[in-house]
Length: 184
Image (cartoon, rainbow, N blue to C red; front, side, top):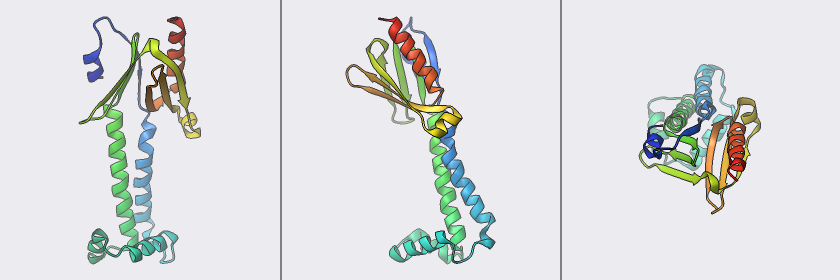
């Protein structure tokens, strides 16, 4: 919350801070788990396994893949190669989600709603609390089970603040609507 503390007005107070839910890490972890399962069950996976058939079909259409041919020269089996690709993809997704959790700041103050995302290129969106036209919460089945959702805050000027993977989205919606009607 370093960035937001620097831009607050002198008499402005943070009423509610929204957090990104750790469920954003799940896709990356699932890819890493799938890679581990491929490595663990490699001796039991036969040549007729459907993923290997798909992989060989792609290989036949894209023979110029330098990465694939480089790994094949070192004697990696198709199963280990798929596991390696899944592991790399899972690590990238996990790292991206971790960066989002660490560097996303979202607060509701008595005057504004402020969101800041990004590390090197940051995007800061502010909307005046008196100019909020509506608050929409989108929550999937998994989001309802784990307690996260996506919040869209629409202003009268047409601007929309999007807050994905927010913990307790209905609490934030209730807080915004309560204060929105109190200010009228």
